[in-house]
Image (cartoon, rainbow, N blue to C red; front, side):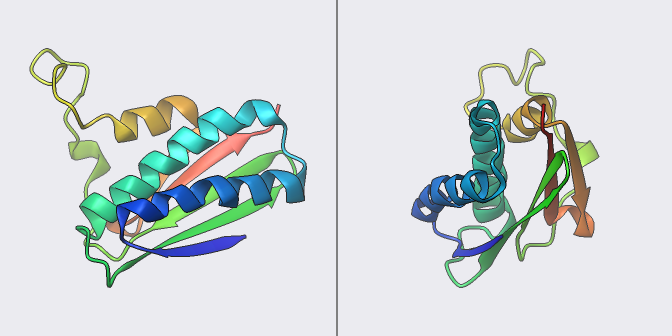
Length: 130
């Protein structure tokens, strides 16, 4: 499955329908839904806000690949990317009270695996069926 959205925050709402269709088509167990929804929402939000810098002319591409017991969802933006190793730890004392900065941590906590490619402009979320 594939979804392409413009970099407008309200378009994040389309993620629910995308996941609903994915779950129905591939008979994914509902227990995975909350973790997938939060992870994918974070990835798409980061792509819109940080990658494409809210430029409504730029797009975010979301693609799912289902293979046996593994679901992969790739989110790509048109931005310049970033170094995922150069993210401040949101749990350290100086960052703990900040409002943002927890998206990558949440993706890593809720997904089986997270990979960055394309210079950080693409994130791949991996979920293993139980």
